[in-house]
Image (cartoon, rainbow, N blue to C red; front, top):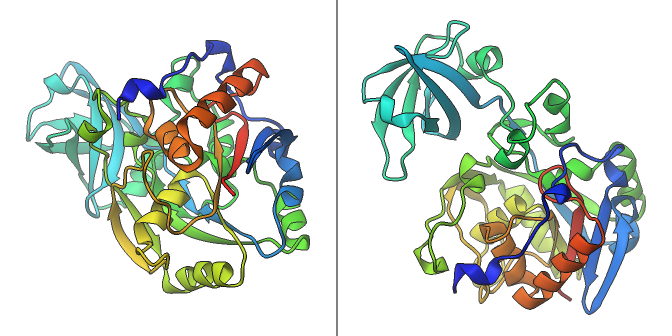
Length: 342
């Protein structure tokens, strides 16, 4: 499909620079079958049914943005995907000044060697020393805010908490699974009281999620791979819920993409441990999920294509137009939508 079919005009003032406080006070556009309602996230228990199951991504964002030097050249690096105990693929600013074998100094005693350059332009960095890379990043790195926020303000101490979900447990993401930022212990207690369960899986979100689609047609776009894991117990729970008549509701496109990667043609979810580069566009047949809670996405992005595949492109264009006119806040720190195709 033509990428420009997924374009829309978004006023800059609709981009949220801070999350709602408290988190579950964010607005939520609910599209349930043929009905569309304006609610808040705290209403979620009433929007779902007893027996439904929410699926959260428990990845934890690491301070993956680094500033350093190679000689006199200033170098910026955003880690993208782990390749080994000390190696990370990174998108590098001023990459033309970096050659294979060069040492980059990131300050605080943190250095890395540029090993090789991939077809996507990313550079494989091998961190020097014996300390775990996680400790090095805690010293020298900063929280990797999305470019549409970082372009308007610098990351600060608040972002260390704001850009982390309450489920964050497995370090490795360089972007937050932002739909889950709306959840609070009080909201989880209300969901539990309503008989709505939850499970977690892990997908380490890469910086590729922020890359624009440069192709003119979706068939020519290449997705970046991200590592994900669903254990057998979680897969069995997902299958059991649907077998009992409940719905599996993915919280975030990352959870959805991993469930779909682990689902067979028979609709059964199986244990999964590996990379996924699944790209979901209109015409895709969903196999493992029955609904999605997600934030509002960028024009012409792979994520807007995904929600269009779930709900229909024209319907999502109309929903986004309603959200923009109604003052909803967009992107990572913005408001939510609950999409139930029926």
